[in-house]
Amino acid sequence: TLNRLEVVNHLEQLVTSLKAGTVCIQKGDKTVTLKPCDPVTFELEAEGKLEKDSLREKLSIELKWKKSEAVPEIEETFVISHQVPTQDDAC
Image 1 (cartoon, rainbow, N blue to C red):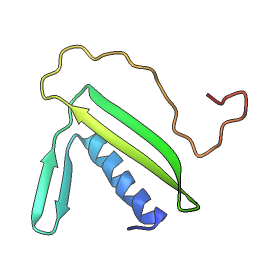
Image 2 (tube, rainbow, N blue to C red; image 1 turned 60 degrees about the horizontal axis):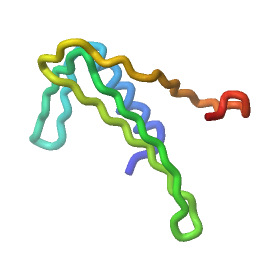
Image 3 (cartoon, one colour; image 1 turned 90 degrees about the horizontal axis):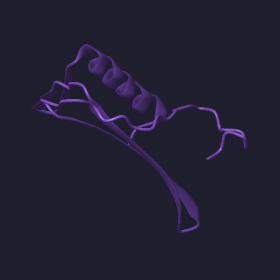
Image 4 (cartoon, one colour; image 1 turned 45 degrees about the vertical axis):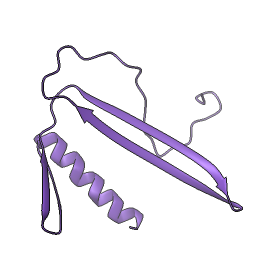
């Protein structure tokens, strides 16, 4: 478990690594090196559910790619923001 600032630092390092084209993840004496290539499938899932009188929220991020991909599929775009959408913007 981490605090938000620690999570932000990890995510910023991930962004920097993705931009550089190499993501190295090290934990203890184990290292995994990934070389993402286009197109990258980006899946984002958010949910909230009531558990024992408290709301539990979850945000899952998944990135996938193949080493030899032909033409990328066109998918619906989305926005990530710190602002809650107004009623006009809501889904």
